[in-house]
Image (tube, rainbow, N blue to C red; front, side, top):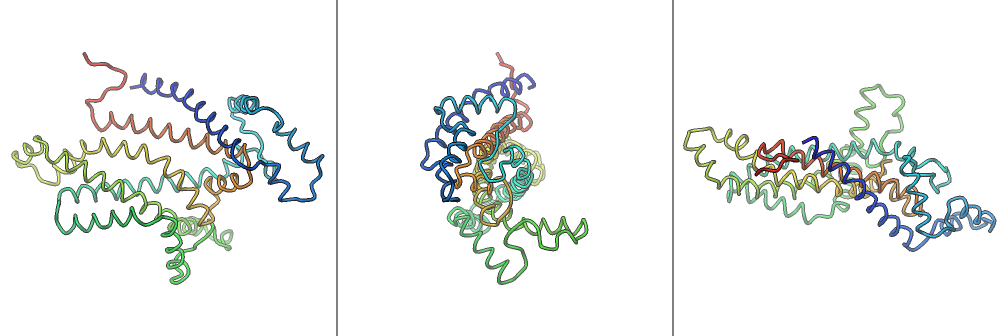
Length: 328
């Protein structure tokens, strides 16, 4: 297992370089440029200032030279300085925003897994019953409703009409005057809506996939043999059948990480949360190339690590799988 993990980590290096190369080309070939944005923000800017800006960030050099210079900085874990007015290092800006995005995504994934898996198992066990049909209707509604529209609807209902939850930001105006428990509760209240919307969006697909996977397992002969031995249904479902049904679900969880990170752009922009998603959106709008590349690198690394964790979880879920060893 250790040899397999090391091999996969080494294989991530050329893959990450390929991702950054494609991302760098796409971003720099897209319409618009930082100098144009700078002129729009300050129409009175002089040509000398424009020339200094271009020279400072090597925008006058060919594209392949700029990528090579950026890649050499990346090896030293230096993402450069932002094009924004604050001129802060990109790594510093990401450190400020990354914890919130990780909190939102990890919380969403845990809730999706804890809710979707039992729902899928029960729906498979009670196939073609009222529960299963109602669950199917819920899944189709979850697929059909646009998440951004549902977010606006929940903001209006729970925040404006009922006044139960805050609809924007991460902290209240009186945050500094609250106790430690009050501060934690205040942050949780501000993240209930974005996490809840994210869970609803991911719940439909994963629960349906878990249902189909469980249906395949319940038809296997060893399940009938377990029932013939008189084992309780609960033990058969959640100990024998669920363990084998987890393998396809683990694959979906590993592949769902990029979707959750991409969804952060929507949720953080709508709810005004100062995370990486909001920073990415603002950086794209102002053509802040160093910040965009820094966020894409972090997202790519998290995605690759998520896929590796999913592969390792295969071995934990099924002892028959042994990475790094070939059976003769």
